[in-house]
Length: 151
Image (cartoon, rainbow, N blue to C red; front, side, top):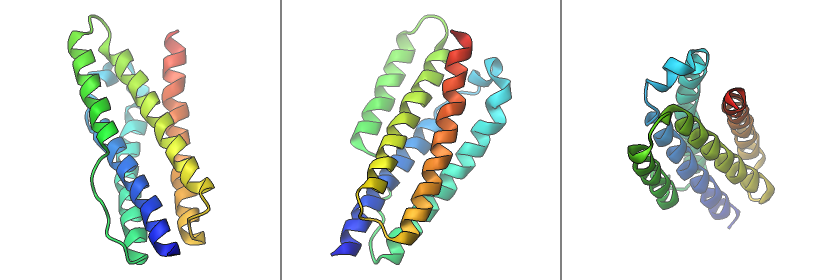
């Protein structure tokens, strides 16, 4: 029973990471014209997102589970809303994009913290998930600072 609960929690996180990776893939290159100092960090986070995904898949398989390698409906809805909003935005869509990254990172932080607090993760999974949370928090703070600089 414990493994099934852990697999369920890990699959939820896999969905979140897939949402995060999909969202990052949509950030247009023109954003980095206004924020060139963060471009390398963004590339690092993209790479790290793929590693985090693979680590979750490995944990799920180690527990005898099947990875649910998809995004969430809420994430897809959010990305569609962003696309629609940006198509009607006059002015700086780059700032709007950065705000959406901050929003997504905050949602990922909340999901990861909830998984950690659930008590359903083994020590190995807890170590890896905690490390993921640290990376996501670092990303969140990086992009949050960008929104504060322009205010």
